[in-house]
Length: 432
Ligand code: HEM
Image (tube, rainbow, N blue to C red):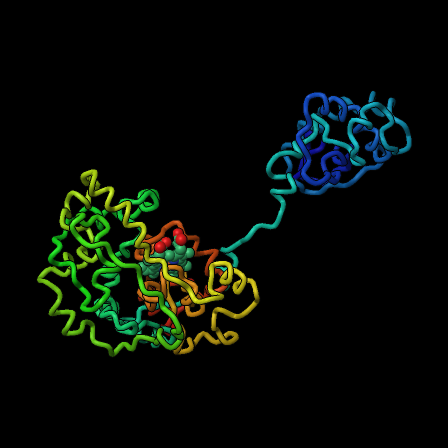
């Protein structure tokens, strides 16, 4: 409610107009806070515009603006002498202050409510993105392929064939289908485990603290054994990892087929390669190197640190196909093309699409696959599951909300929530 000068409230009040004019008068774009001299000048010019409205009154009803109360009182005490000094017609200020201020609208009076406060500046009033509103309108999706298959959405939860790239990545697919999502959160060898980016990104210390003997390193059985998983802190006697061979001529949709739930959790070959401790194997894949303890906890020797630094030349960033640069992706996102792959309101996912959950949201990453600077293969590690840990372990600085805004298709919910929703008596309230 807007209080009158008399301090009563609750009922409609007839109030003088002019104290509010200065408050609601349109401000020029990007108004600068008046300096002390400007404030003095505008104090003299402001009433000249206000004057024609001095006799006008408005009716204000139930408008709550307690901050106006003090301003009202102060203005009320000044009103009488000021109205005597000001002309009867509104006119541009003719005093010297008008030359100092080219504005046609009056400046803020010092005793008026603070129009320069963050709440009233044009910048603050500018429409802001309200993702929560959008999120509330998007469907809730469960990606629990291995468990929540009762719901129609879950039945075809996307995945990827572990050997779609011929790199013996069965380990990943096996763990995915096994439902052990936390087991596949081993970040790629790049960025370096001791890089500043990782240090600032809140990367889990688990992968950098636990040791791993080099004998457990080879988890893959082909030519990639030395490239992506070669420890960045390897001793100088080890050969430097060759650069990755860029993926060319590959149809992302063809190579990124959905993972059938019937794929066995772990291939025999992988089981043979895995030592007794699977956890240690995975840590080996991180590439802590022969001096695992020292390298992992940051106590590496100077020469080891130098080796790790020089490993930046073996970044895993791939050579993207022409027309698939980050700028191209940004352009495609803004092009209006439907990247969500949702046919109208149909929530049944096309079988060829790749979905992933990240930060509680589900994205269709099919279109982004050839744009991923880390390559399709690594991005596909997050297919059909919650890749939040993997993502954060790799590049927590990447603004996925912005990059995949046009690919957002739903909210990731737990299996329990999905079951509750699938139940006949389910309702959205039960999920809340
Ligand atoms: C799902 C959403 C993802 C998005 C939007 C995304 C985006 C990006 C971006 C923008 C970069 C370039 C980062 C930079 O230059 O600093 C990048 C690099 C990379 N990403 Fe992803 N990524 C995603 C998921 C993943 C996943 C699940 C992995 C799995 C390990 C992964 C692995 C990598 C790797 C290895 C690089 C190369 C880092 C480099 O060399 O700079 N990404 N990604």
